[in-house]
Length: 258
Image (tube, rainbow, N blue to C red; front, side, top):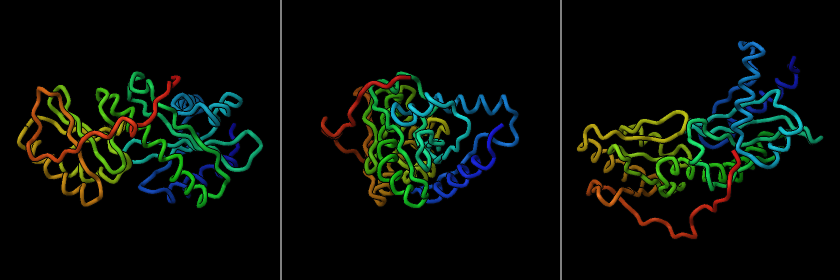
């Protein structure tokens, strides 16, 4: 049986923290009252497998199996797991969660964003999550999502990279959720698990109009766009484009254990 008082404290903290983070976040609590014991153990085991950490959270899970957690989810597919601490400290641990739908190869060479310890004040802790954890997590997410698209340059908070796909569609994985509404309005469809937005090639004229339309809208939000494509394929002529960043500006890469 789980401790309802402890579970309630973690759940309440997660709800307040989610409200303080930039963007829109929702919370899911494990265990839930509508799941039987075997089902919620399976949910916890699946979450523990996807926690993207080789530091504090990994050490904690090695000592104590996951018994309860709260998952904070953003519309673009980003997730954070709020965990109990077992090191004698107050507060909680919060760790990034790897998207379940991306292939293992996409993570190869990407540095783990790792989690951080929280003191237990959701208002102050939200600042640490936003300025530290989310910065590293968003950069890592962009890199693995673009690795899944074929090793293209990842997007940046102020630079959206659109990538031609073999079937003629265009895909992109923006950092954060600022660009999402613009992409959706233009006809891009987001995969809820990977966070990747895709624009079908059924109507190439409509596709080109959509690409042209999002440029000024994103520019007004302080986001430039770049369209990458194979040399054998021509991009829509009016699509905005910028040069790739210099090599030194790319995220560093180390191995990731899966």
